[in-house]
Image 1 (cartoon, rainbow, N blue to C red):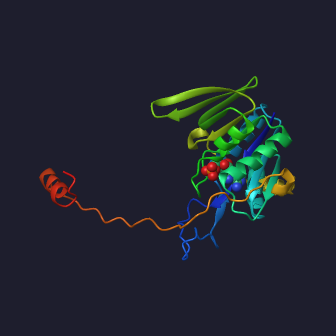
Image 2 (image 1 turned 45 degrees about the vertical axis):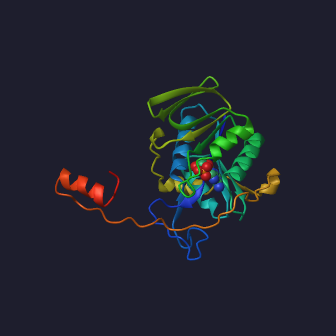
Image 3 (image 1 turned 90 degrees about the horizontal axis):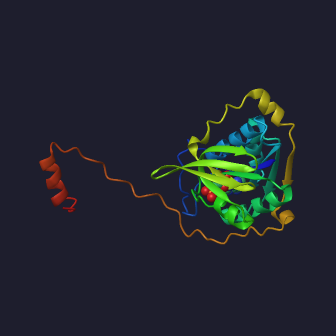
Length: 249
Ligand code: AMP
C-alpha cells in the first residue's frame, strides 16, 4: 500500500506575522519557514504505518516554490521514502493543490492520502475535502486515531458530543488533528540519510493541471487592537458597567 502525504511550507508557528505595508498580504521576507505542524503529524502517522508493516512506501508531496525542497527533506528525515515537488511560483489556492494531489494519487495509485486538517498560514481547511471530492474517495477529517487493516481505515475523530468512529474502505483521504500522534524528533543521522533519498521535481503542466488562482485577495489588514480589560471590585459594579458603559443590559 502506497501512502501519499502532503506537506506545505508555511511561516513557522513561533513567528509573529506582520502585514505588508501595502496591505497585499503577509510579509514573509526573511521569516523562518517550516513544515505545517499538521503535516508533520501526517508524515509521522504514515511512517508509523510503514514501520508497522501496513504500508509499502511513503511519498511526501509539496506544491510551491523551489524552497519547498527543504520541507520535503524534513519529511524524508522523519522517514518518508521519496518526495515529489510540484514546483510553481503561482500563489496556490486549496483547489489547485487538491487538483495536483489528485493527479499524483492517480499517477502513483496511492491507497491512502494523509493531509493536514489545515495549513496554519491560510487556515483554509479545504484541501483534503476538495481532494476527496475530486478523486471520488471517502474521507475522514480531523483524525485523532487511525487504524489500517484489511483494506479498511478506522478513524476516531473528535466531535462536539465526544468521539466519533468512522470506517472507510481504502483508497481514502484522511486529515490529521493535533491529537493523532506526537511527531518524532528528527535526528542528525536521519537528516544526512534524507539527503540521499529521491526527490523528483515536476511542474503543474506535467500533471495537466491549471493552477491559475480563482480567488483574488482584495486587502489584508491587522485585526483591531483590543482595549485593555478592567477589574471590577464586585458584582454590583460589574452590573453597573454593563448597563452604563457596555450598554448590554
Ligand atoms: P488548507 O486547506 O490550505 O488549510 O490545507 C490543508 C492541508 O492540505 C495542509 O495541511 C497540507 O497537508 C495540504 N496542503 C495545502 N497546501 C499545500 C501545498 N502547497 N503543498 C502541499 N500540501 C498542501
